[in-house]
Every structure is written in structure tokens, then in C-alpha cells.
Length: 129
Image (cartoon, rainbow, N blue to C red):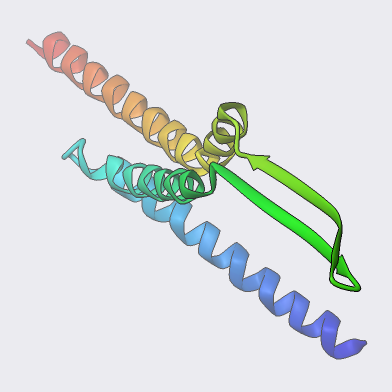
């Protein structure tokens, strides 16, 4: 029991460290002069979310026939149709893009701070003239 709690704590620490590292990297990339650098991580997350959706498409419709044979006679035959609906795909797409949205919000907030700082610098320069 103690080993399970110990390893759970380690896993939690590793996951939180990775998430913290990604957030720190996003903040630092968003603060760079080149505005495209801050869009790298959101783009990667969006591509991963797209892969999730594209992996669902081959399983759009399946038919399973279950047949029970007793003493050489077919007793029952059941057909099960499983369909992945557009609504399911939409919700999976929304949920899998939550990290993309968070990274984009970090990007927008940092770019807005940079824009305000640049405007204040311009105003200070104009006041000195």
C-alpha cells in the first residue's frame, strides 16, 4: 500500500512538472519578439487533437453478427450497429483541444502585455520630444 502511494506521488510530480514546463515554455515563447514562436505549441496541440479525430473515423460504423449454434442449429442471431456520430466527434474534438485553448489564452495575454508596453514606450518617447 505504501509503495502505491509513493509511486502515485512520483507520477503526480512528473505530470505536474511536465505541465509546468510546457506552460513556462509557452510563456517564454510568447514573450519573444517574433510573434510566430508563441504559436508553435498551440499548433502542435491542435495537430494532436486532429489525429485523435482522424483515428476515430475508421470506426464510424461497424456491424457485428453474433450467432449461437446449438446442436447444429442456429438459435439466435444478433446484429449490433455501433456508429460514431458527428456529435461524438465534435465533443471529442472540443475536449481534446482544451490544451490548445489554454496555450492560446497564454499567448494572447502575453502578446497583449507586449503591445501595451510598446504603446507606453512610444508615449514616453513622444513626451520626451
